[in-house]
Length: 180
Ligand SMILES: [Zn+2]
Ligand SMILES: [Zn+2]
Ligand SMILES: [Zn+2]
Image (cartoon, rainbow, N blue to C red; front, top):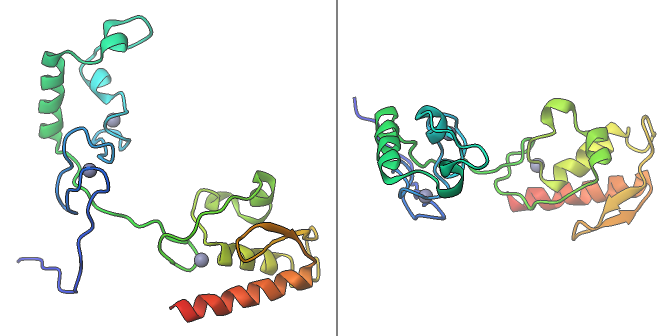
């Protein structure tokens, strides 16, 4: 059986080494993942751990990295394990699925207040974030801590009351649906 990509689909390219999705990165590309730990290949310590090379402070490896011979051994290990091909996993809002949403920052305690523990590491678009805030705060009924801060069109914090915030969220939702 052969698998084919049947939809019109333009393959992503790696933003660093320019390889296409499904291909192996150019060796040394900072986007390549390590097949052993899943981390960034040029930055993890798997070469040292797998080859039993001490790499603590003051060691040769710490000062100079791998020797050519060690590097060759490491490459052989990598090839044997199988290097990780490039696939793009678009960063998307965990709630509405919008790809590559504008990033924004909120104070940590505010994030913890509105976002449940398991979801604190995910990406949200700010439309969804505002909606979550409105939903949790009971549409102005102040079911939880009252809101003091909303965000304007540029997502700069502004002082609002809950009714204002609801208007902002409704406007944002309308904006969102015209994009789709
Ligand atoms: Zn690459
Ligand atoms: Zn690793
Ligand atoms: Zn969203």
